[in-house]
Image (cartoon, rainbow, N blue to C red; front, side, top):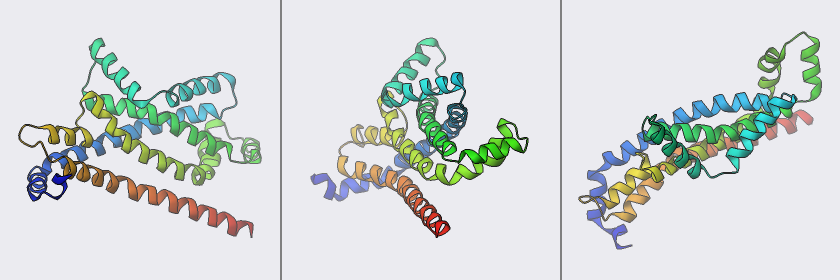
Length: 231
């Protein structure tokens, strides 16, 4: 741990700060694109899972159970090599976006399904009585009411996805953790292990902590509002 207190090691971190900023930028871009994909998949399979129809529910369960019960590292390696051997590889960042989007989409689907199913059945019946079709009912009646249930766990899911970008390291990615590893093992930059990983961890913390805090505050405010409504 002597490197932790080495001024030369910290100076090296500062000189090559661009490496860490590039990793942070790639992590944010990967997480942002994967978030869009996961939301699309989450909405589709969440609606299918709460539709009450056998085939959509069955397909939704297959997707959710298959993805949630296998490691994201395994899924990322499978996609990476499957795309490479099929001649359709679009780069490591694309693989990361696809793998993280599919993986996180399964959790988003469960969050959305749970939010929809938390709405009293009377709301569904009232919407149907007013002549709303399925999508009209969801868009105008059900989803707006389920937002307060959906958003806090959704934010926590996003936090986990940001941390999961570190899994790109396994396929030689250009994310924050991968570039940190390249830095500490580089011929000209190697040796500053403790400072480099502290900086890497601090950057992840600065990304994730505000979101985690937001989710906690959001959940508390919603619970307080519900208690006041009951009183």
